[in-house]
Structure formats: structure tokens, C-alpha cells
Image: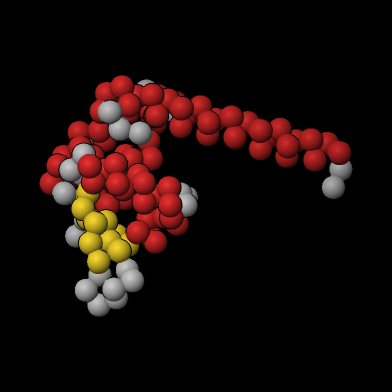
Length: 131
């Protein structure tokens, strides 16, 4: 690989990392300010809302959200405390723990979704995008 190619790849990677950090920071600020939710909390609510039954195994949520199992457990604990999520044990596999979206959790996710989409539109270059 030539030095120019190497330098170009490094520059592209740095630009991508910077853009990612900027978008995440904007989402974090807006969701906290408007809805009192962290970005990670919103993303978990969103993933649960995408499920037809509003529930997902904690193990699957952990891998999808890129959070460790312990970090996800603490986050789900906060969402439980807010009344947005309930935890339950799988009937056919006692080792499996599910997080289930509550009515209040669904309402919180639906209410925060336009803010999430608006920030994505603004930071990714499509101002005025509506949910």
C-alpha cells in the first residue's frame, strides 16, 4: 500500500470518527434537554419499540446496543425505575431475561422520536426532516 493511500485511509477514518462523535453528541444533548433521556436509553426504547411484542432478550439488546451486559443491566434498571421497561424471565428458558416496553416507555419513545430524527437530519445534512 502506498503512503498516499495509507494517509488517505487514515484521514477518511478520522473524518468518519469525528462525524460520528458529533452526531452522537448532538443527539445526546437534544434527547436529554427535550426528553430527559440519554441517547443509550432512547436507543434501547427504540429497539424494544421495533419488536412486534415490545420485548427483547437482554443478551440480544446488549449485542445490538454495543453495551456490555452490566452496562445494559444498569441502563434497563434506570428505565425500569422510570416505568418505561419491565424485566421478566423467559418461560421456556429460565436463564433468559427479557426487557419489555411498557405503555409509558412506548409513549416516551414515540414522543422523543421526532427530536431524534430532526437531529439526524440536521447533523447529517437534511434539515427539516420530520418523523
